[in-house]
Image 1 (cartoon, rainbow, N blue to C red):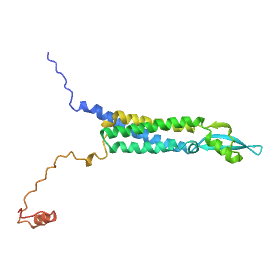
Image 2 (image 1 turned 135 degrees about the vertical axis):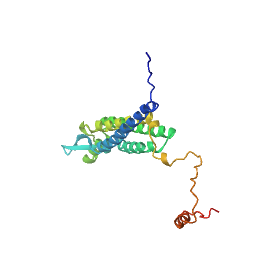
Image 3 (image 1 turned 180 degrees about the vertical axis):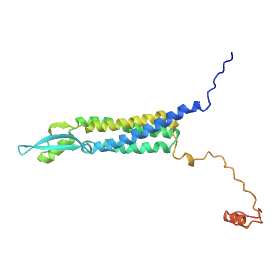
Image 4 (image 1 turned 90 degrees about the vertical axis):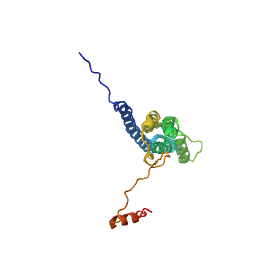
Length: 213
């Protein structure tokens, strides 16, 4: 009894990396774009609130994310630019840009969480409201928006890690315009038939000598 050994198709060896590249590319684009949008949105919302004593009464104060720190919004823009730039570079350049994308996300997470304990923005508003430069805010509370900004930064960080791990499998926008330095073969055209005027005119339009001289 003869046994037939199945021979794997050569294309199956390349389908795995190609599938991983497509999946990681889709996830990186989703995480990067969504993370930047979430971080930008969260930075415009109210992060903290408190009260200041003004003329014997309590004056309510609030501070947005941009009041507390402008770093998350700035890093979100940097991360979004890095996400686009990943597809415009190759090899070492792609690794550098992917690292910048990951660092942008990590920076957003760190600064958003640090903003939870930062009362300087509210203290400044309390001093302006009371006219006393030494006045500070009292009964400070925080919203969930700093955590939302941190979640956006985490998505950017994941996009950067995906770019670092699988970026070599991704296409580049400039790939179709690049040349490897080898001379391109010139296409040979059939000789112009002198008995066909339309071919002579076409040759003249192309800037060719219809006589072949």
